[in-house]
Figure 1 (cartoon, rainbow, N blue to C red):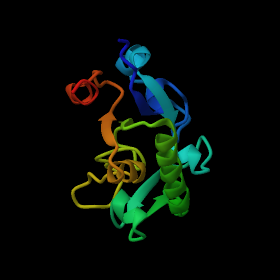
Figure 2 (cartoon, rainbow, N blue to C red; figure 1 turned 60 degrees about the vertical axis):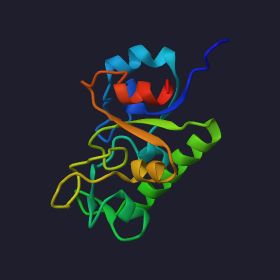
Figure 3 (cartoon, rainbow, N blue to C red; figure 1 turned 60 degrees about the horizontal axis):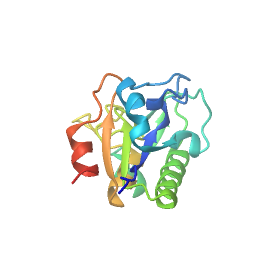
Figure 4 (tube, one colour; figure 1 turned 90 degrees about the horizontal axis):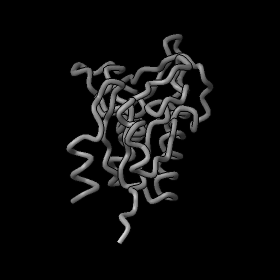
Length: 164
């Protein structure tokens, strides 16, 4: 019996797509090398929310991604522009893509105010807030694994999810 490749949402920048705020990628070479073993679905929540590339970086203000989704916090660019609606729209569209594709796992860019599980781009004292997209995915039961450029992949956590 053929093993079906798992459908996995992936932050597009981790696959080498230049969609980051600075119009650069965050290529994770191990992930790219492993991509033939999965069915990767590249997403950039900030672009899906309507933000351009390049774009001014944004920080979480007044809470984490869950607080943004609950209307208690916002995202503000360095020049003071409120981009909360775009981040929420991007998170919702990313989740919609997960629903359409059946993805139950997401490999998301670390430190991102959208994708990260522990972003330093916030004003919380612990400086490790969950991003907006990561928050909505986790709340909907999708397993989020945070990856950085130099991270080794596949991780033990990923392998345990896809090979229970």
